[in-house]
Length: 174
Image (tube, rainbow, N blue to C red; front, side):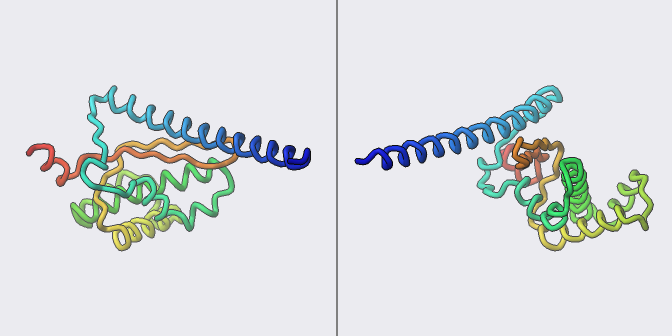
């Protein structure tokens, strides 16, 4: 092998090692976020159950991000992204209230919001509640808590805790 081949191979090796290190850091931050949620749940005496145990493959965090992706792409900075994700979580949970309890219960819940019904934020929230009900109606997992963090390179980590649904409660009681 020539000296130039050795240099190229060494450079490629360093590059792969560097990329591997970034992946490890990403996983570390995500694990930290998950641990924060676990600790909060433990403090509140909430039992955490892995959805995979019940054959559920989709992560609610991923599904929610898919739902809000069009508006999330418009975020100017981390603060915008946090606001959009928070609005998405509220829309998700309001959609579940609408689906399971009805329009009247949703209206009662919405009275707690101080926003004007004709404001742009409220219109956006209503739009995403509708999207949740129409395009993601098969998901009934109520988001009880979430953790959002950003990597130095701008990548976003999003983790959620969901409440126990009736299906899961029946399985646990059997």
